[in-house]
Length: 185
Image 1 (cartoon, rainbow, N blue to C red):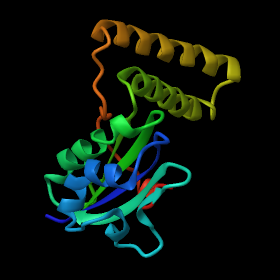
Image 2 (image 1 turned 45 degrees about the vertical axis):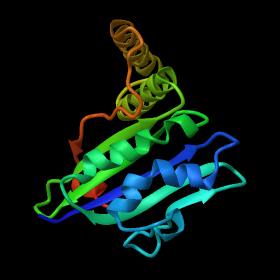
Image 3 (image 1 turned 60 degrees about the vertical axis):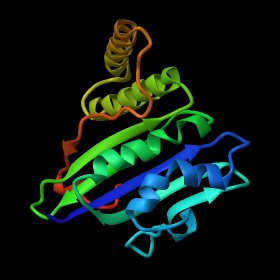
């Protein structure tokens, strides 16, 4: 069964991070797509740069699409988790799967230097998403109430986990509406 995957995000890296460290972290992904370096990791779409390391700005930009198999989901999470020691701050990477049968999925992989930073980025992303949906129907004050509740839920969840949040954790995949298909940026 053919699956097209799109991986998209920007990862801020520590100042001392080198290209070889990034390539080493992403080696499982590079091996999967049969490439030796980030420069060779091109997307199937010409207008997408693939994997790009900005040595001066210490940024890893990802905008890559390719045909993948069932094992890709675990592999991409493993590769992105390996980036965590090199990250300056937490970031999310969108991973979308476009199945031939139209059952598309969307997920996130969060990376960051610490479990706490990842947790904070997940919370911030959730509050942004919920606030955006509510903005169509509610006032800023009402949205603030819901955002405060989401914040409380995340804090309670963190306390219950007693700091054991895992780097690179993902949100559950969800289906995409036809308007969201393809090129989510």
